[in-house]
Image (cartoon, rainbow, N blue to C red; front, side, top):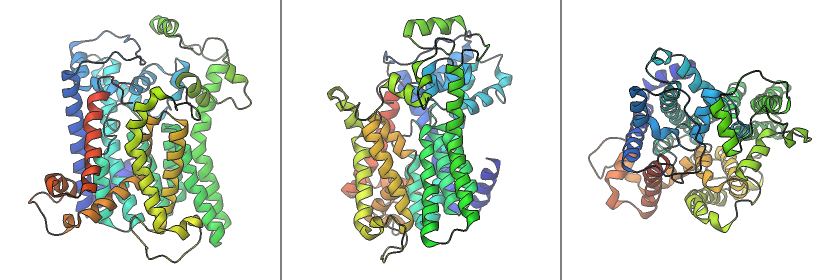
Length: 480
């Protein structure tokens, strides 16, 4: 990460676009933090049936201040990440949450913030650590998206506007709260950028970190596989390059395999572990029916492929093919409808302009009037990636998660929105309608009344989900 930050500093000194991306990202994260404090104070918390472990350490007045300022960042799944960082994988269903994010915030809370131990309990330090980490990671993710866009689209303006849209995306609250989306977006976008620069092993290392942060990180192995297919088709890849790709794919899969191995050892071997579980956590397990690792060996341990993740998702969250297709889930489908429409529009717009390219899976050179920008041939693999995630998320996941899954994984969504805004409002790069900053996102917002309808719809979606999502999420209302 130090190398990455040094590289960014060097580029910043020569690239005003990159400087503006960093400033705007930090401003957006700060605004989200302020909004979550205000909404947390103004709106009473909903009594949700969510994971809510007891606090084992006594609280101080400083803890109450931290809870007031950062308490909204510890809702829904954030409770799991914070709990794992504090206590480890005590309950079986905690193992649905991958370890990289808890390890980092735990290290920050027990390392740099350790001098505050006499003033703040560990949970408060973890909240502060998660806010700091996500602020940094989301900003660096915006930088990576900009750099990736510059290489892939061959257009600094399009990449710049896409990065600014990422800063104010519909999942802004998830990029700030104690979730792993910011960390995942950073590692994924950086890996893609390195891959686009033909640095296969370096990109694979970042993909490996993405796999350690979220389970869907293993999908990034598809980018490496696609590179290998292109090398074989064009007969450009020598044995050494192909072996690099193979090693890269194994590197991407390794964190997932290691974590599943850890889960198997912890859950399926009765001789594992001598750690004592605090009585309060045992009582919570009895009350809620949670399974702890010292109990009877679960049935999934005897499966041919004993994967804890698929079992936990199925048993605890009823995740599976078409399982969410129920009438009572209609509000959640409506919640995911905008990103579904945007995803379909992105795919169809690209495919309709590159029929021959899509027919050959982008593996062969075809005649096309588009050599760069959103319609460029290098974008094909990102569109295919988006299509795969969209279909899987819609059919097999809790559909409301589709929004944060796609916006934290797929750069092409931002490129498409940037393309639409650029086409609708070309004046943002020329004669200004308003006298304001050079930030085109701010220019668009200040010229709202004169914008095209398509532009208004995109900006309203981004801003609406940012504000409404923050208000609902921090008060345990259904925005997960």
